[in-house]
Image 1: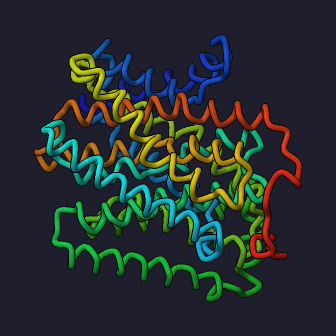
Image 2 (image 1 turned 180 degrees about the vertical axis):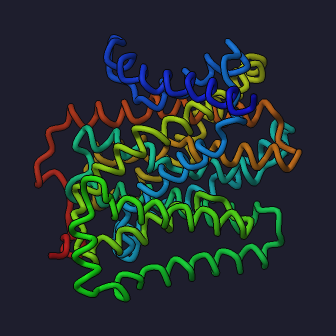
Length: 403
């Protein structure tokens, strides 16, 4: 019986995922991101509206979807970028956001508007790089110097909050959690040397010949890597997002050392991730959306929506003033203010702590949904209207891409 219920839920979820591209294509006006349709579809089929499906029976698949989302973000990240100027500016911008978040959440707590100020404050400093990637890629916004700054800002807006979640918001003490993060990071570092141990001609031949058709060697081992780090992170009491990001970064190293056809592998990731697991995560998140709490206090949602822009977005106007043209700084403002997956994770953590108000949790997620719907569209609109030339952007010798 449980299997039948799970399959019924999966049918409803897969139907929403399959209909999403059609809905996006048929809606008038600017194209909205599919993730918004996934979330709205999840709300519609979920227990708060039609009651066609429950998220509990597909939770494992949803967690894999979350893992895939952050694996792809980690895979796109160039670690050396964080040591260069884009990374230094991104870290400076995040620290400014963190400082503003402390003041804002302190005021909201003093006013009795929120109770769990740590997850709320941290939520306001996040950026949904994984969610933004397909939107920005489709609009050619990830090339050149601007793309480097976007990747760095998005990575810092995901990695820093993830580390703080793992250390300070877990169920264990801070010291144990910090040791756990270090051990998982050490495991990821050890895994990066695996290709060096497998550089024999026979292994190279197997990898080369088995990348396509029925072999799918690279895809299968990528899945093993993802599942191993997800399982290890979960076993240590850490958020699976940390394991997924590390898996993506390790995988990037593997593909280079084993001479893997990266274009083919990335197409497979897109097919498996965006074709199957990632939609399940977002639809499942929509199914858990508490419409009643939002309808009782809609201004709370709008407040968090604005605060995402103020806390996370506006520092970009200051941080990038010497390296980006004014219109690009505006684009970066709306890009960095876009957030969702980590808002879902932080809302879940806050409710597990038993101190976050249901209205706050629902409003945080709702603000994230609204940010994904509105902020990237504004950034894309600015990008399309501004015909920038190389002379429009201040690029110093230090920022010049390395050969």
